[in-house]
Length: 216
Image 1 (spheres, rainbow, N blue to C red):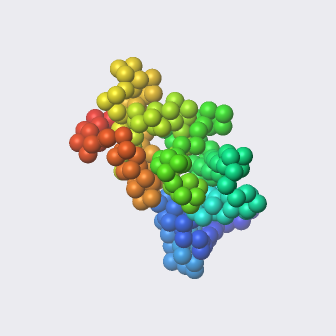
Image 2 (tube, one colour; image 1 turned 90 degrees about the vertical axis):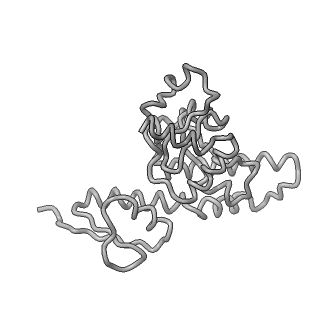
Image 3 (cartoon, rainbow, N blue to C red; image 1 turned 120 degrees about the vertical axis):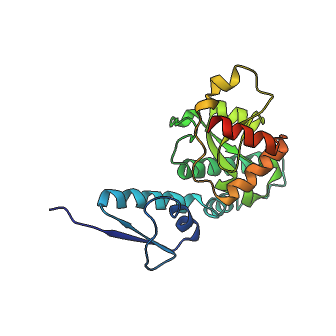
């Protein structure tokens, strides 16, 4: 007979515990910051994989990797600055791939070549900690990344897509906005950055509510 559960997984990492607490199963009494029970080894193994990927993608793990890889670079020369930026963007993309499970949450696309690491608050306006924070990023397919990066779409606090009035008539259909799901499992840090994105591109509170009602 296969081993029987329940199998208990206790988490001490605050960020990982908070992320897992938004998904089933619900936390149980137990040691650590949060304990979760799983009926099968398959479910436990899936949870362990998620814990690992969250652990290496949540703040401040990407920032720590960035500091190690750029320790010998001062960033004071024209030659070093693009190298440092490329290292940071590579680390940020890898972290988003882990955090979003390697797929665009809007289209479901999983082909890495078609996925883009989108900063919510632009790289140039951030310090290193915010540049490497996965809560300041979305993993989007190329067309959605382009639309988001230029302010043609944004997202409400509940993850609902908010199109800009500046979109051409054909663009919403081409992007599939009417059938687009909400961004899942947003954290407060995501919402704060998305509020800054909406403000940057002039999305009003009224437009957010009306669009949310029309496509939910």
